[in-house]
Amino acid sequence: DLAIVDLRLAKGSSGLETARHLRMDHKVPTLFVSGTMNDEIVKQALTLAPVGFVEKPFTPTQIQQPLDAAHYLKRHIHL
Image (cartoon, rainbow, N blue to C red; front, top):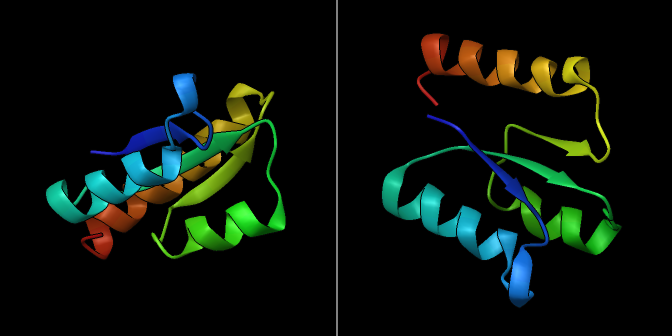
């Protein structure tokens, strides 16, 4: 499993909180996407050990690379 989570969700929800819940309660790793990544948000997100960050808008290739990396980690390192 892998959650692709936008750092900014609708109605003021926090993608960081969603990712924290998924990681802590369900052991689901996260790939973050965002149209506005700043240093503070990235620093907070790194505490959740994401498999990566992709800035929007992105191409299929840009999102495929971290998906492939997450798949590899899951199979070989048991993320």
